Length: 74
Image (tube, rainbow, N blue to C red; front, side):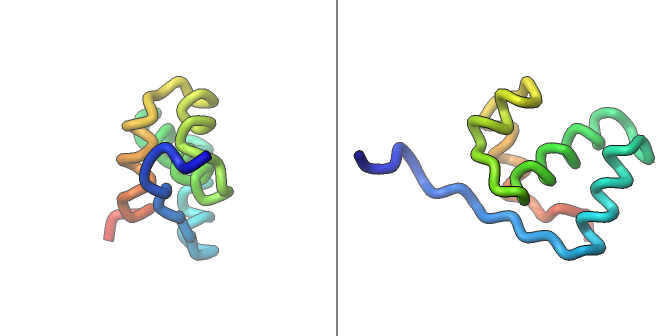
């Protein structure tokens, strides 16, 4: 069986980025930004868009969007 769509963008985080995103998840930012941080961390841990979407109750498009952007604003 061939893949159903394009391959997901691999998310690679530095130690510093992972620490900052974890701080956001722990409440250092608004709930909306914390949700984005959780999505990015799950993607960095190798989870698929479908599984992240199901785990966090968001659409696959939402996961795809955050997977494709830089983890932290530059």
